[in-house]
Image (cartoon, rainbow, N blue to C red; front, side, top):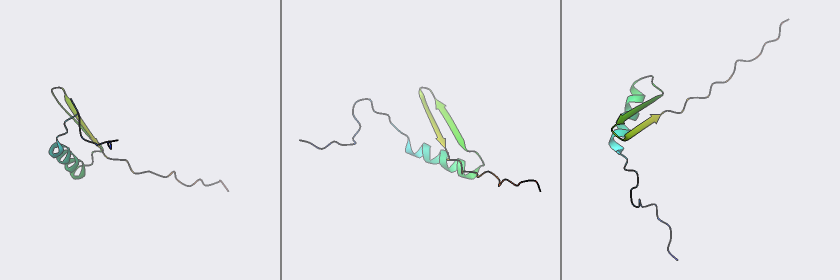
Length: 62
């Protein structure tokens, strides 16, 4: 019995790692939370996970 591999097969998605890194650096350099680039049939979206914001504490009227 052979072990499964993570090797791409057939028409697997080809990811341009350098482009993804450049887009991630652009997110870090700006206040953007996501960026999407489309080039022909290829579309790449890079998004930053938004920080959780807690709700303000409730205050009761005196």
